[in-house]
Length: 332
Ligand code: NAD
Ligand code: MG
Image (cartoon, protein in one colour):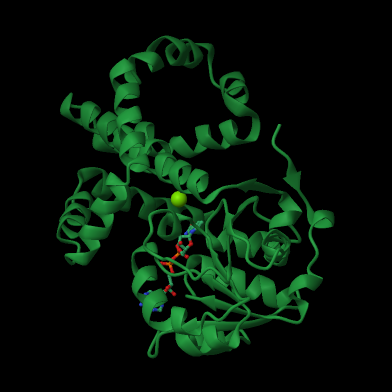
């Protein structure tokens, strides 16, 4: 079993007299900044001039600076920008202010692992990556809990990189739930694989294919929506609470027999071969190159795919049905 580290393993004092810059105030940024502030740390938020988030951060009692000034003022710089803009912001605003002895931190390894950001040798480079979206990182912290997180060291110039990363993880509440050590390579490759094959790509393709099959066979789209999309949450909650066993205990014997005999016909040897291919595209940098070039060219494919997906019938049926759910909830 890999070792988990908790509150007692991390020392917040290591960051107590330091200034922490949180660059970006989106999903992760707002949660890290507010949690660290509530943990007693000295936090500044780095945003581009004119950012809509600046007012929100100021109202929350945080100090906001342009990114370059935040980076200059800070000892510990956490980059929480969208992965595709990190390279340019790093090059123009952060690198000129990244003097010896500072810590450069990330919540995902993409830009370091694929060589988009190349830091100088005299700074620590670490990762603290909560395994959950930012609103959960914030909400659990306010409840006295935390979101389990990964941490990793890419470069240890100070000899303290690991302790500093663990202290940061404590400051955002991660060590309340437990933190696990990894490498930039392992985090980046498994994170991309998980979101492409299972969590986002695999799941949305499975939901759509099931829905389309029922509708094409003449069943009502509303029923197809309930069966193939809505009920996913009920099943996933059981799986997360108690593994596949708990889910199978809760469903009918009919459903369990169908699961065991039919599931393997949906994820076949061909599917597994494709999973290995997707993994090798991640490992070789092919996926990273495609994503970087797509963004550099102004996202033509991304934009078109987003539009097509928004027009899918499952989204239209879903919008109408969910509007009725909230109407029913208000009546209750
Ligand atoms: P986000 O899109 O929610 O927020 C990004 C922030 O950056 C916003 O405040 C945006 O206004 C700002 N921004 C955008 N362009 C900018 C620019 N040019 N200059 C300055 N600011 C700019 O991003 P996020 O989802 O919080 O992701 C941040 C990092 O955290 C990424 O590395 C991501 O991989 C990682 N991460 C995200 C999650 C998640 O669930 N969202 C989980 C773990 C790790
Ligand atoms: Mg991810």
